[in-house]
Length: 263
Length: 227
Ligand SMILES: Nc1ncnc2c1ncn2[C@@H]1O[C@H](COP(=O)(O)OP(=O)(O)OP(=O)(O)O)[C@@H](O)[C@H]1O
Ligand SMILES: [Mg+2]
Image (cartoon, each protein chain N blue to C red):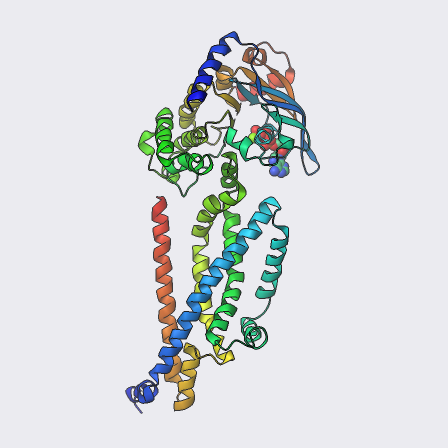
């Protein structure tokens, strides 16, 4: 744990230079079909250590499917994904990958039969064999980070959507993931709760953790991302810095998409 | 003869109440132990079937389970009890033991489908949340899915235990004196049908009502835990 904190600090220092960062995840020629329908049609993508990338694009373009391939919730039909140089197609057991690549879901998916503390400590205690005491101390720290210390003994059903999503983020962070994937973390929330969750994610982005976020919140994506990927019909149509995508771009597809979402 | 005279004739004279008492004892023993077998075995069958559905693993075990479910759910309970006693356990003289096994296997087939239904009703997102934290299928099944599934299928399981209790009344087919058979013996001795049979029905009713209120309380407690 100590080492990890150190390396995150180093990464932050390194990011000032902005060059030569190692890729954590590499995607090559990724193809995925459901039945006869090809959803991902040859995706190329690289996620660098310590970077925050967002994936935007129209509904049904395959953003969730792409994200779910990254932690092997979906199995690709072609191409290759590498996590720190290791090919996913050669891994016989995905649990190692998944304990390093955390995920936050649109619908939170907290465990309703466990209270907040148990939701957060379950995986570290059961899977990483961390002592209960240590895991609980960690959980309290994470709950402070997401502003929910007072809800430690509450059950998910007693929390608002925004609070549940913040607990879900804490739960994912409790495994100390190398990469965090977030699939539309605010889409299921009432408007007044979106801000609190986005703020937590923004703070997180500042800690140097590697993140990939699928989002329809364009202002947020522009503010928080190092790289933005624009997806359309199963391919990454364009990628670049937020300025490249949101300002200096003349792609009619992207411009029409941005006009539609930026009301 | 007045009602109280009949009552005395049927239950008190010749200590006939003992038929009911011994019968009740057997009925309870068969129900309780068959229910334990039914829950444990049914639960395991449901887990095998669900893990197979979710991951494609456990192919052979799943086939065995499916064959078992088809046969046991497709044949009458009485026939199963008769086959167990006269064909499979010919050399076993302990009728209660045979009945426990026969009813246990029968009940497990129904429990399995109830629990499997409960497992399928748990949101797929729960499963994915477990996977995304790095847990394996078996752990997710036992620690995430089943606790939620059990809550969902508790009413159906409570129903199944009531059905089981009532179904043990066919135990007389293998000459086992359960509650029903006990009442019937009294009837054959006193030539009085109404009193012993109504008495027997009344005892079943009390047992069922007891079971119902017990599971109601259990359900309420489980619900309370989550709020
Ligand atoms: N398990 C599945 N089985 C069949 N089709 C699927 C499955 N999952 C996704 N799809 C289809 O794949 C396509 C892309 O879905 P995906 O969820 O990746 O899109 P998305 O870009 O995340 O869209 P949204 O912005 O609406 O979330 C959709 O047409 C969807 O219906
Ligand atoms: Mg999606």
